Image 1 (cartoon, one colour):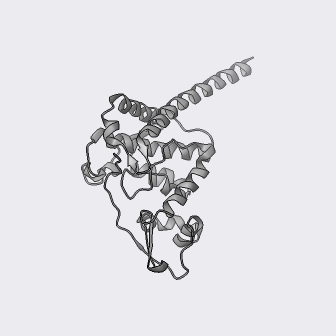
Image 2 (spheres, one colour):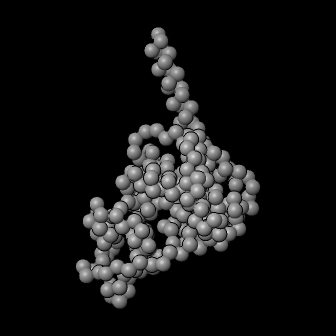
Image 3 (tube, rainbow, N blue to C red):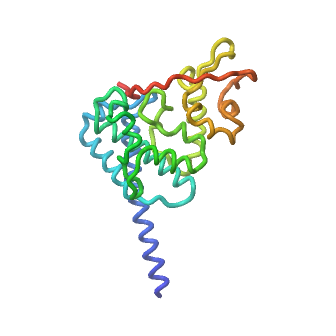
Length: 242
């Protein structure tokens, strides 16, 4: 009898957690579909809608309290959503700005403990470089968005475990075939400038055979065998759309 009661209580608790997660992901999906475009985020319109700013604040609050469960994909999807949602909230709280670097002190937006995720207060750097990076997934760099023009575009829906790998592949493919945003090829393929991401995080692509091998996995046509890479300057302008 006790075991049956305990199992019932545990089942009810899991249903309650699932419903709470469904609530914030439903709201987050609605907001992303409304304000995220292929050319950027409609920050001005979003900022002028007090109800939708409050809805995002509730999403961020739910993420702060939720303890991620499940396997690797469930947890990775949660942390990617946590990063992107908190970035959006941070920009909207301080809008209008021209670049995320306008948020003083310089780069303090990323390095100071400004956000709470799964009950722990942390910085964006800790969330990205210690937690998300720990999953050993180089495609993470194409689904995290730092609200800047040189970032890979923000997806217009929340990430979910069941489609995470497909969405990461799509994001990497889109970015690495986006000339000149993700990669700029000129002079018959002899000159190639790639995103600064591949300079900052070169080590993350070693398991794939290095930066060029990783790029060739997602890019058509592949780079020339004698390709020498250089790196683009990073554009920190706000990824805003009209």
